Length: 123
Image (cartoon, rainbow, N blue to C red; front, side):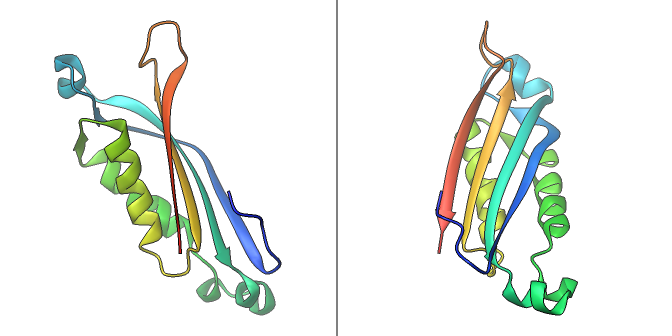
């Protein structure tokens, strides 16, 4: 993860719990499962801080709503694909200079709490 430079803001969305179709086994294809999403986003926040104006800030609520809609309305065979599509949604916002997305699939393996994939993008 890049260093947090002066004027940059780090937004973290922690443990966004959604349900979607994820997997390749018959049971996974037929039944929704929980996924846990964590995001880290860096963007230049000088104007937002200076003006105290939402129009100058990166609206994390808008980003999160688009992620919720996308994840809940689609099907994914691979955790890698789901993670990349979420990263693409975040990076579609021009103000984002760096984003990291981790998606956990709870109970994907016997004896493990979860399996996760992390992908990152930057401009």
